[in-house]
Amino acid sequence: MNEELGPSMSDFTLLDRPEILQFIFYPRKDFSPEPRVADATTHFIPVDEGISISCRFYFADGKAANVLFFHGNGEIASDYDHIAPLFTQIGINLFVADYRGYGSSGGTPTFSAMMKDAHPVFDGFKRILRQEGYSGNLFVMGRSLGAAPAIELAFNYQDEMGGLIIESGFASVGRLVDLVGVPVETLGLNRQKLSFNVERIRSVTIPTLIIHGEYDNLIPLQHGRDLYQSSGAKDKRLLVIPGATHNDIFLVGMDDYLKAMKEFVMAQS
Image (cartoon, rainbow, N blue to C red; front, side, top):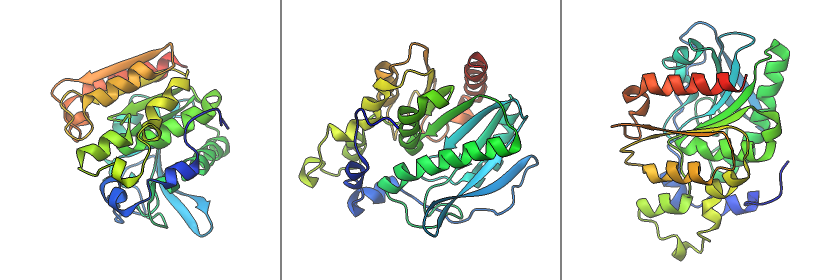
């Protein structure tokens, strides 16, 4: 594991304050136990004593690219029953992970738990791939809030994956907190430490794809541009979806979005 730079888990604990968590997590517990689509399975990955994370695996082919996906703060894994078939149709096996308190996961969501849990979820996904004989390249992807655990894994295990994909991701928690009116400095938080995504991505040298909506009203496009510019990858790509906001980016830019995903994972095969 890379301990070269960036915040420790104790630093993430500083974000576990009620006045911050209420703006970061919107957990839902209506996870459907059985997938509503074919070629999908439900998995539970233990992350702590008595706590497991609910996940959904949508698969296309044993040799297809494998994408571990961390979703946004108001979503759950089973929401992707309606979207994942579009990924499998372009040759991507999609593994969507929940957070504590989401779907059928145990526990209560906190920022530090989300970051810590990303590691056993990653290990669990690799174990499933080995057991099922899936041999395609492995990628990690995060949407919105999910950018944090995705970059956490890429920073620590980039030698084990083919690439990093960030969609509507944030560069700095501090700037997000500013948008909702929480005074970062009066909370005693170090603004530089809240920029861990943009700081850590500097050390991520594997191929990286950044996707962002032109008119994202929750995480402005500048966050995506900052992540792209800060990325340490030689092979890095930025796709801006014209006219898209935070929550309609996939619908508005579906063709370009899926084309970019397919070209990106195929290039690393």
